Amino acid sequence: MIYGSIEAGGTKFVCAIGNDELEILERVSFPTTTPDETMKAVVDFFNQHKEGLESIGVGSFGPIDLQRESPTYGYITSTPKIAWQNFDFVGTLKKHFAIPVAWTTDVNAACYGEYVSGHGKGLSSVVYYTVGTGIGGGALQNGTFVEGFSHPEMGHMLVRRYPEDSFSGNCPFHQDCLEGMAAGPAIEKRTGTKGQDLSEDNLAWEIEADYLAQCAYNTTLMLSPDIIIFGGGVMKQAQLKKKVQEKFSELINGYVVTPEITEYIVTPKLADNAGTIGCLALAKQVKVNS
View 1 (cartoon, rainbow, N blue to C red):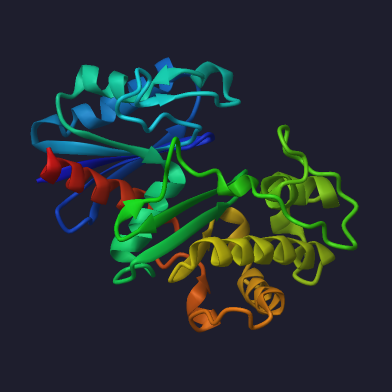
View 2 (cartoon, rainbow, N blue to C red):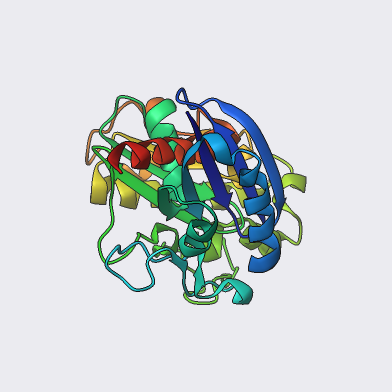
């Protein structure tokens, strides 16, 4: 049996095929342009494997509609990417492939990947944040995504301003929320330099760690997870994880006893494969349940 994975990102799509063991057998990526162009590339890739394809798991940029009873279930909804607003993603796939489709957010998919094969394996409560062009969060409790009327938008939680930070914020909706203060574009606008080009001792990393530690603090007190995983391009700064751990410990100030800090606030075990493996696992699950 083979399963399909689609990581639908705002910048690029990553499509893959995997087996029952969630091994990635083939993977391609291409830029996110218009729905017509991008979905044609998706369909062309999976058509090569159509004969053995059991199901497809999709982790998409959003916001997306996850409510199965909704007339717009499977749609990308109010995204800033105008060409993709109100796009029927699942319906488009179903026109070409008469197989089950699992549908969730891109960060939920990465969270699920770490839950089944990464640092979250064997744990009951897992939270995953991706810190990159934006900030998104996903949470699992006993294998089920935490969601209500929609998926969480934890990347837009409010944070207290770092004392020496005069940057006004970069979120078009909330200005100085977590994403507005700590996503990759915020680092670049604050400093005038891309994060990867800043020195390790630049004050920007103290500021960044402070906001991410506040994120971990809020998450800890709201959800009491077994683990908090920070992924995404910004977290590839080697010094950042330790700074976040240290600042988190200062903030929590012994109020609750968390798991050992080096095992509680971590970066992804699966690195850049978390989303793909998560989508494959969701595809496998939706096939079993169909």
